[in-house]
Image (spheres, helix red, strand yellow):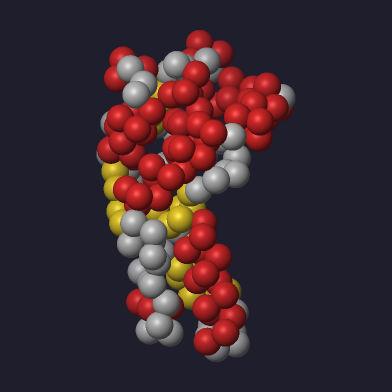
Length: 165
């Protein structure tokens, strides 16, 4: 069986991804780089739901089948960043538009009908999960501070330029 997940988020996510990147930059007062016009649409799935979805497929799925495990909510990237600004109390002026990546998907979402037919459904709504994720990063600097100061710094500068952080 193959499980394909939509965009995951939650605690312990490496800060190169949109949600932890924006949370940590907001916490530090660093620019919040948004690709292009920020109107890219993503389907968000809390990591605990993805794990539960995989377990459900293992217990109830059919060998050789492919299952898309998607979240219950779609959201435009700019709206995600604006929610993070509100949750962290960051200054809205940190929002910085950067050139879009070549080939950047305008919409990335999965149809989860097949896994839902097995009786699985995501439980964590995006608004609730995002608030919990922001709180986790705010409370667990011991985990992410060493990451932000190592090789990640080089990656960040290559991706966004040294002028952003």
